[in-house]
Amino acid sequence: MPVEIKVPTLGESVTTAIVSKWLKQPGEQVAADEAVAELETDKVSVEVSAPEAGVLGAHAVAEGDEVEVGTVLTTVGGESGAVAGSEPPADVSASASASDAGAAPASAGSYLPQPETAAPSASVQSEVPASSGQAAKPAPPAPTGAPAAAPAEVGETDYDVIVVGSGPGGYVCALRAAQLGMKVACVEKRATLGGTCLNIGCIPSKALLQSSENFHEATEGFAAHGIIVGEVKLDLARMHARKAEVVGANVKGVEFLFKKNGVTWLKGAGRINAPHTIEVTGEGGAKSFRAKHIVIATGSDSVSLPGIEIDEKRIVSSTGALELESVPKHLVVIGGGVIGLELGSVWKRLGAQVTVIEYLDRLVPGIDGEVAKAFERVLTKQGLKFKLGHKVTKVEASETGTVVTVEKAKGGAAETIEADIVLVAIGRRAVTDGLGLADVGVALDNKGRVEVDAHYATNIEGIYAIGDVIAGPMLAHKAEDEGVALAEILAGQAGHVNYGVIPAVVYTWPEVAGIGKIEEELKAEGVDYVVGKFPFSANGRARAMNSTDGFVKILADRKTDRLLGAHILGPDAGTLIAELATAMEFGASAEDVARICHAHPTLNEAVKEAALATGGRALHV
Image (cartoon, rainbow, N blue to C red; front, top):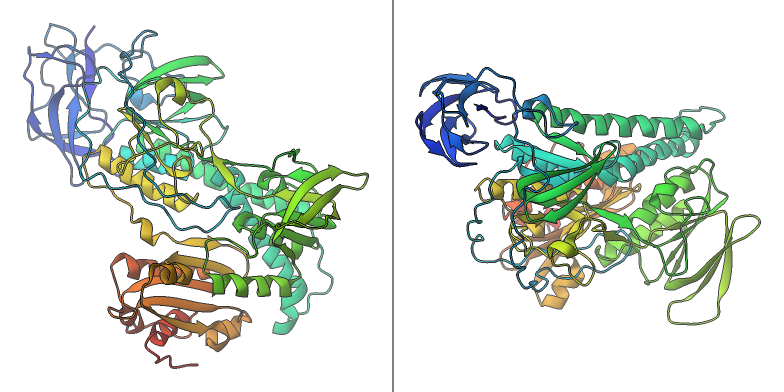
């Protein structure tokens, strides 16, 4: 029976196209996936391919006609030459959208023989220190000099791209690929889209950080502004409910974007059985799908220390720390990185005593050392206690909670600390379990991360990886940029990521943000540089906000004045760093930033003053 060939999804907000050229004529024999027509829009040029081999039917539209998404262009498979009026074949997935109903289902034995596995390439990305949630420098993939050779003929497929994982990297990759005219599906086993970040990571933690900041302001800060509120009570259940509402709005937003852009959600756990073939196991059982490109975007998961079992009740990961039903009297945080300090700050503001134990002699490995010391002083002033240069050797349950055994990292007498709750926040690992990568031959590095080249391709043709599952800092925005870059590469464009200009942020209050080189790196590399600093205590807006802790620090090349790095400890640092990210992306100098007119009074003026300070001409200090 002839199969209809329709106008595919053309991208965001694009509903029509012009038939610019017919590549095949009625009666001609065409192969599966062979282009039969070209469409033009104001955004993309799209080739429409035959979903299966057969004889092309009559053209239902002429060259130059304007057609809408879903319009039948012609048919393939029959010999009558007429446009079929029969119903399209059954959907390949119970969860597939109606727009995908014309896709040819994958048969149980429909897969290509696995090609010989290429020798695993050496790791092409520099190592990142394995400390808890650190704001480490991104490690770019090594350049390959030229894109990989054109792939071999894939044969019949259900999708152009199947992305495994719907976190920031995965869902953004899927959306961008769909915008570029590709037929896309995303595999996700959770009940909601968005991955760790939206469900149990970035978004719920920021909701609690904001709520706890508001609580702290009501109890400690309002009086300074002449606002007397009387007794302030904590409704933790309502705070958690609000957090759930924020999460719900975000995950539903991703689902809406999938529907808007024609991305099919394949609900279930994915396993790559062969190149171009993935099996998705959900409530309805297992189904196989084929794609020209498979993208691994399965993210990361928290890790524990040897001998310490996380039960998410007394000994918790970040997931459990987001769901505590009452404020602990004493919270011990193992790990002085981003996650530990953010969640430690939440519970400290709500009334807990918080002790942070860090193996190194400093907080947040990877950020500028001067900033780290000032950050420690600010958090200490807020009431957090630190045991730096210490290690945890044992955590045991007690009648009242837990007993944590600690000793100096370099050795020494052990001591014990009693705590209601212990948060283990020492880092995260790439999630590759259950994907079948070993069976297919996908190479992993010595940390269990997927090895990729500069185009995010693995050693197996047609399989790619992005985000936390490859080397580099585990940051949602880094994963998003990689998702966009890969989608554009697959579309034949020049997608890329500038790994030297990826900001890292700690969302405490004040916040910490950094981008580019830290001063320790410049010294080690022998770079001749200058430093410009400006304190928020001299900024009018910061004074008005009663948030004067911290400073802006800019590093510039002494000879060329080019920006090399920027680091901020202060109010809204995560927002302020964007100006410097833009400047560095375009190769700006410190003077370029200094000569931009900044509105007054704003926090951003501190950035301008720090840029002026690199030349010894700050005006307000």
